[in-house]
Length: 308
Image 1 (cartoon, rainbow, N blue to C red):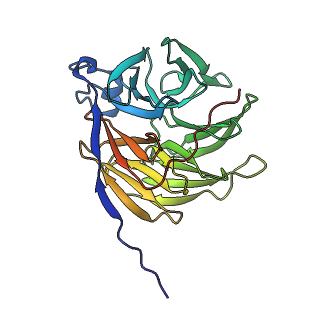
Image 2 (tube, rainbow, N blue to C red):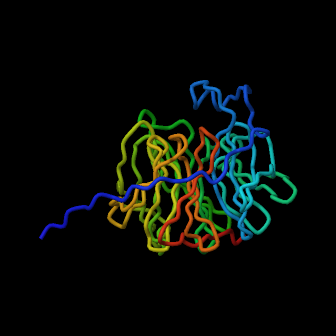
Image 3 (tube, rainbow, N blue to C red):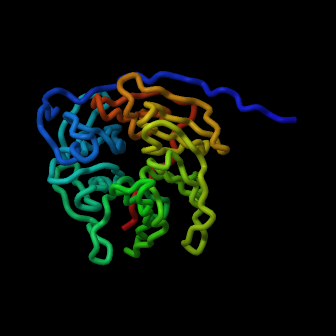
């Protein structure tokens, strides 16, 4: 008997909060927007949502090198600003965010003082192409992507693992635009967003530290492919898709169980679970400078930090 795939449930998000006008850099040109937005006026571009233990949400602003804190009521404050292009973020410890900075490599940001320090700016004295997103596992391994301007024309994007002892492993070097990363609940598989290939790759993590039989887990469509990723406690993969303004909720067979649609703009770039029970999915919508949200039936997976 053949079981046919059921159409996914389609739901709209709601606006939780928007970047206040006092923080918008209206009319200010940036080199990032020139390269990545075709020179379009860009007063902000939000990414990297991550929660602290007190329920505050932190987001990055790529073109203007800023980190913002958003409290549970949706009120914004600026945490830090530097000459960089911050994207993904995860907490390194209780006080510092580890941020992938396209210009500068991995940077640590003190969320209490706003101080910024280099964490890993080069590999064997060579600069990265342009780091993008990151995730920790339960023993402190850090997986991060080095995207740069790669794509189908130049499939040389990289996936790295930084071990707690400082050893840096190059796991993949043939990716056309590696972006978001997430781990399966058992940490035996890493999911990798491949934006310009319009796919999510499945990367088995072997016991000897290598990878093998990397495959395409999910294929999307449209002008821009998968971006930020998250996993819930049931092992479902949530995929932000900015070209469509969707967040796909995929089961273990990559079948969409639910599609969350942006209610404000189509550039839904990244996702993070939050709220008291961690069942609320928060999404950055970058073009309008909004944070959207929707409640799901399963909490987000565990959040790990460095053990350095």
